[in-house]
Length: 176
Image 1 (cartoon, rainbow, N blue to C red):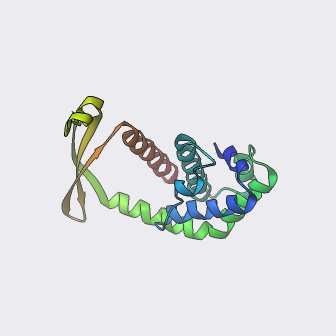
Image 2: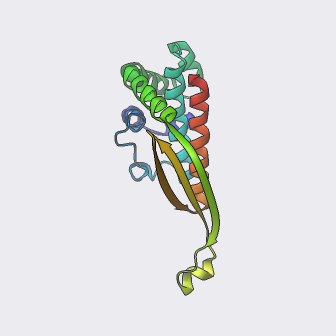
C-alpha cells in the first residue's frame, strides 16, 4: 500500500511521514483534506494505516535499515530513503509512544460491551435513506474505576474502527 507514496513529491512524502509519526505520538495526525487530489478515501486510509504499521512494526521489532528498505521495495529509492530517514530520526519518539500505549492498554480492561443496530429515522428525508447505524456501548475498567463510552457509527466508520482495532491487536502481538 505504501507504493502510493510515489505519487507525492519527495518533500511532501517526507512531510507526510513526519505527520504520520506525529499521529502515532499523540499529536496532530495528517489530514486527508491536505491530500484530497492525490488519493480516494479508501486509498488514503490504506496508506496512512500502512505507514503507521510500518513505523510501529519497525520500531517494535527493532528492524534494521535493510529490513525496512525490503518492506519499502515497492517505492522508488528516493521515497524509500525519505521514509527511512523519518524512521531513523524519530525512532526514540515512536518507541516511547508505543511503550506509553502498551502501558495504557494493559491498565485498561474492557469490562462489558453492548451493541444495537438502528435505522436513522429522524426526518422524512433521512428515513427514506434507511441508513443503518451501530450504537456501541463500552464499559472500560481503568485505574480501578469504570468508564462508559457510547459511540454511534455508520458502516464506513465501523469498518474503520474494526481496521484500527485489528492493527492495534497486531501491534500488541508483535510487542509481546
